[in-house]
Amino acid sequence: MSDTADHPCLECGACCCSYRVDFSVYELDDAGGTVPAALAVPVNGAKVRMCGTDRIPLRCVALVGTVGQRAHCGIYAQRPQPCRELEPGSYGCDKARLRHGLPPLEPTETWQRRMA
Ligand code: SF4
Ligand code: SF4
Image 1 (cartoon, rainbow, N blue to C red):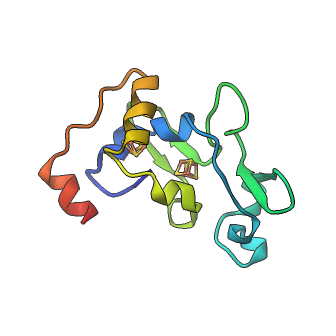
Image 2: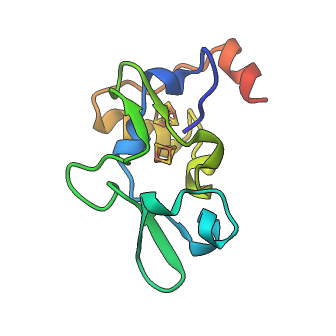
Image 3: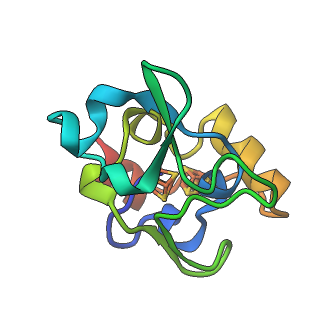
């Protein structure tokens, strides 16, 4: 998920309610990274998972707002790598949006320019 003014993610949040978000323990703030450790649970010695992405209905605890209306990542600057890698308009984005009854993104000049 991206999170910039006028960005389509700010009216979406579907990926944050679709996928398990696993990442390295070294991304946690108590291990020198950025992600608040209180928002993750252990998977094994090397990996942790964003709370809320390991249950049904799935919803990351850091997501603020309502999917498909107004939504944003509450820890945007501190979010883990998988969230940084999922790009609007990608296959994973389209799949998450469809899962929540939202159409695939129609790329617009405005947000493509913002992403560049
Ligand atoms: S599903 Fe796509 S548009 Fe929606 S928040 Fe995630 S990356 Fe953004
Ligand atoms: S950390 Fe932020 S971007 Fe990642 S799944 Fe949670 S709310 Fe979405």
